[in-house]
Amino acid sequence: MTVSTNERDLSKYAIAIQQLEQGRSNATGVCTLTPGTTSTTVTAPNCGASSKVLLFQTTANAAAAWATTFHTASGKGTFTLTHANNAQTDRTFNFVCLG
Image 1 (cartoon, one colour):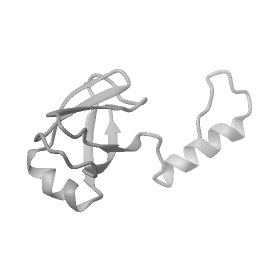
Image 2 (image 1 turned 30 degrees about the vertical axis):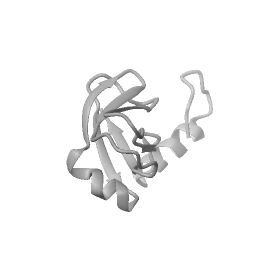
Image 3 (image 1 turned 180 degrees about the vertical axis):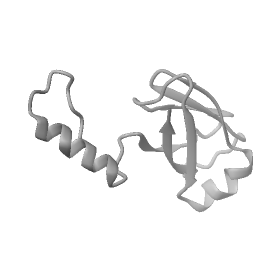
């Protein structure tokens, strides 16, 4: 749940806090490494310049790419992963972008 800074209904703030307590967050997403290149830029609206990115493999090819995949940069709304050049189209990861 997203709460506007103009929101006047306190119950919406309470629901958002409860969701955070339950482990829900809008700082997560899914990304797939771009085939045929050595870097992938991922759109992550909650990402900032000092954010840390945690990756979780979701496919066998993502697991195989794990050793050569790493977070190299973060910026407003994006982060960049550097990885081995590969033609596979299913190197898919879940991510959490914190900070």
